[in-house]
Amino acid sequence: MENSRRLISLRALLRQTAALAAAVLLTGCETLSYYAQAVGGQISLMARAQPLETVIADAATTADLRVRLELARSIRDYASRELMLPDNGSYRSYADLERPYVVWNVVAAPEFSLSPVESCFPVAGCVPYRGFFAREDAERYAQGLRIAGNDVELRGVPAYSTLGRFDDPLLSTFIRFPDVELARLIFHELAHQLLYVKGDATFNESFAVAVERSGVRRWLAATGRSSALQLFFDAQDQNRRFFEELERSRARLRSIYATQLPPEAMRERKRAELAALKQALSSNPRFRSLEPNNALLASYATYTQLVPAFEKLLEEEGGDLGKFYSRVKALSASEPSSRGPLSAPIP
Image (cartoon, rainbow, N blue to C red):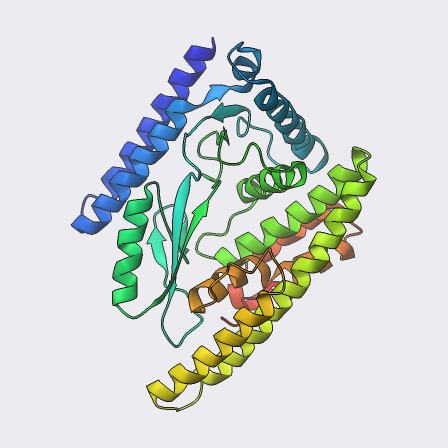
């Protein structure tokens, strides 16, 4: 029966990827090459997925992995039961990828702009990044963007969502994350399946972050992890200060880029601002390794700019997730500039 389900899943995957390939046959060679690696990577990932029950029961599964899978299963059940997130086959299977990340994302922004370069796709719409299953492909693409004069950030990513089109598996790239991070990631990715607005990355990511934060708080409280809950609050406070520092730097850079200064003078002021930001971040070991540039600032803004507005909406609904989801879905149907507190922010 399990093998039959896997066969059906793979057949569905092949049908959908074949349809996707047909949709881009009239595009350029570079686009075809990109889709080929994306389709191949997704097929390879799904082919590795095995039902959780199979992996947990397998005598070859190590004790520590079995514990992580059982925890992930309980988190997954909690997500649908208590957070009203989609109840489907996602995160009910496991795939060992034998690599540190599932994909490598490339984010780019022009030298004097905080607006990220977008890539547009049939399903996701336009997004401020491009993902690759092979690091060397990501590095090649990133180098081309650098040569064109852009600021670039290349980052390994442990998970991504197929937005409910496939049953996303738990992956070896994140299964050994600390408990809170594992829960956060599962809640975040399932939130994308609940609501995704094509071509509006800031709305989508900020919504998912708001859901993950509320979800983690509820899950920790429900499982009696009071000490972990306090640590989570402390970490959130630290993150808030970090994001505020980034936003202040973004505001200063935005002012610099709006001037009529000659390029070299603007470049010098930009260097000074980024050096000051690097110094400010160096006091925290978590952020010390970051190399600030326009791409990094654009990337973090995508995930944070609307989070306070989403959290305020949830508070206005008395913490009722059902009412919150309904209100957000109603707002998402409006034009990005007409969503009230959730209107598109300044890049």
